[in-house]
Image (cartoon, rainbow over all chains, first blue to last red; front, side):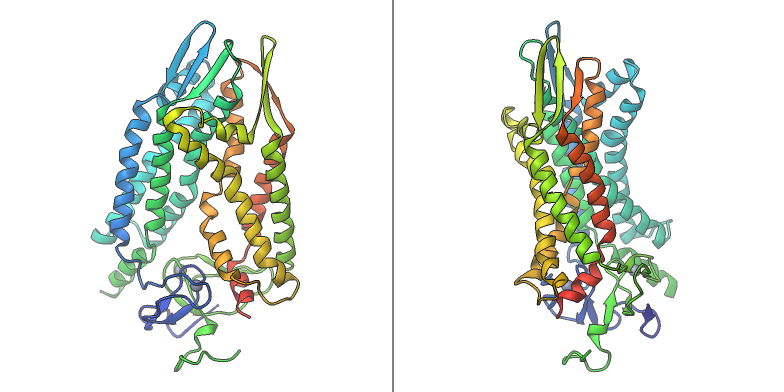
Length: 209
Length: 211
Ligand SMILES: [Zn+2]
Ligand SMILES: [Zn+2]
């Protein structure tokens, strides 16, 4: 790969880059002539969008933990379990591994994502103790891992369709599954709204100052 | 290569901008198997592979066949005290349909594990088919490829497979569980999806759609 002169950004060169297909166009071009993507030197209102999706994601995460995720009826008993309650139950029965997977996917990852996105967005405005490369890595991890939180919703779907044995045993999904899915989707949208070029703008400005 | 008419000075068609950090480079096509990496943020910009088009189409066809077959065949079956029940992927998606307010989740789950993976595979076939056959790109191929790329994070078939494994352990005490043929099809699908994303050099695809 050849650097065109010194390493410069498209914005500094009076160009606008397509984030979808990497083609560059003269600044002010509205749509990418190769892929049709809308061109913006930096995504407009990126941080506001990040925060808006982030907030609804956090809000949806609260009922996701308060309501039952699953209700199980067997001949002898019927019980409803929240996300954390279900994991505790599994651990009590000796299934430590699975309890850990569920706690990781449904509690640690969502909370970690809320924190990471907030850190990235705050870092753009107020500077960050982390280097640009570290923050870029953090962003990529958030993008990659975020989808995996959906696993608990799928587990509920599988159990509810599979365990339909009339009076012997049956499982049905609780309202928390909807809130949890919404929280995952909103958080993914929040991460996608973030324009990672903002990380590097601040970084380059700092280097120059 | 002819210079872009509007460009006074540098030839814009020969340049590439890192989508992550906005650094601009003069694109130099690396050899097959080699990669061009952004000097600033280390994002992989170009990673061509020999015969990637054929491989990607083969994988996409396999994905379509597997998802359709796996959707209809049972993927798990349980047995408790003489009663048994088998469930297909479609049943799993529809499990939410009966549950009143969470019914819209049924649609979302079906989309994430069936429709979007199939749609992405079909789009890849549509876009790369003509390229592999050395024909001009299909109409709206660029829009089709962009859609397929935008849908990438929303294609969750592989997550569903891991979900099956967890569901199994959860009910292992309660019932006897059997794997159906669809489970193995979906497991194969996970491998294919990983291969598909690893082989895809977006830059090469966009370049080939330019002609
Ligand atoms: Zn473009
Ligand atoms: Zn870069």
